[in-house]
Image (cartoon, rainbow, N blue to C red):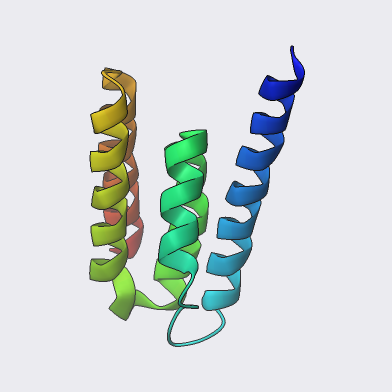
Length: 107
């Protein structure tokens, strides 16, 4: 692994961890921190970690079910961005499975 690849991985991990921390903090309140949308978009776009995001999104939605629609919108925006940059069918399936998991747990 060259230095550029290492730096990129560290940057991706840092963004993802900030997004997770932001969502966990938001779950304690009735509204989410204003940077959550930005962090989610950047982290999941760069790291492609839609399945890992499911746990965090699910925890947030269970804590604040009134925000489900907003997070579905964020998730769809992330999916659109990923589909623009790659032709991997795995990403599309992954995000639809994540949506299904979230809906099932809400019942």
